[in-house]
Image (cartoon, rainbow, N blue to C red; front, side, top):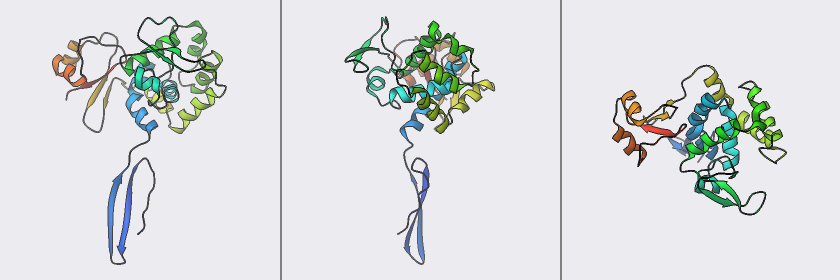
Length: 239
């Protein structure tokens, strides 16, 4: 019996030889990596945030991957905190977690999209990060180094880790999409489901009219208990 396998994270073709005159070929679908799954889930949100905040989508995604352990870390799982942002005067829900010191206070969010929005507000609202916004919007290397220099992380290798993720997974292509004017707020996926990334001014009523559906249908598909929306929030749209 011989098997050929090309990529552990892709669909692969396996050939099984029964004898010299008979061969069976079957296709085996293997799960994608946790990083690829994370990118697939959050790339559209990172692109939307690039439009509103001017932070490169590549940087946002790389930070999310690194800080959250591709969405599998405790802060991400239990607090929807994908960027390791600590309380710093935070008035919302909190979670306590060992970091540089024991049981430090971290922000807790109702949904991951709010973590992405808060990450953008955190960087745009603090003077120490102001120089980053003077860089070219596709200068991910400058951003990676600047974040470390401004005190976002204490790890000396933080810039190299971000740059490595961006180049290994080609995250810079999402920056290019935004800079080339591609629309970030509606994404068609293979399953046929559409998504909308909430922007300033969006309401459930306006979205229902835009996509020819109803407020109730959108709420039901997204398990929403109210009509409140958050900028950067990802909504499933009934087709």
